[in-house]
Length: 105
Image 1 (cartoon, rainbow, N blue to C red):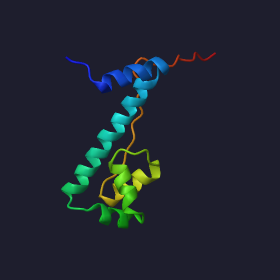
Image 2 (cartoon, rainbow, N blue to C red):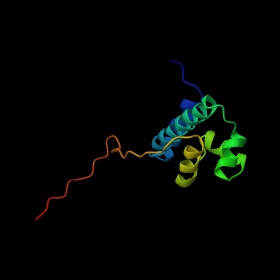
Image 3 (tube, rainbow, N blue to C red):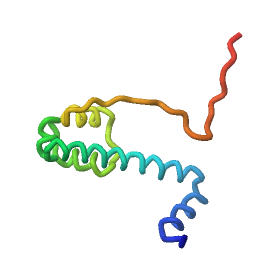
């Protein structure tokens, strides 16, 4: 496979900051979630304007959320409620990063 600008960019940034791939992965997870939420909104026949009104916020906030922007958890909760969904959480260990188990005395 041929390398492109994005491959070179990630490689260069990783040399400067070894944690850069983790930052990229987090941004991709946010983007994927945003796309799923936008698809759910559209499947329910709701416009960004209607969702924003239900949230009592500006349509630009909904647009930012749906584009994968970094938003507050409370904003995400209000968005889910506005499209008729519940937000639930799951905490997973990060791959390759294990915390030592403390032994009790």
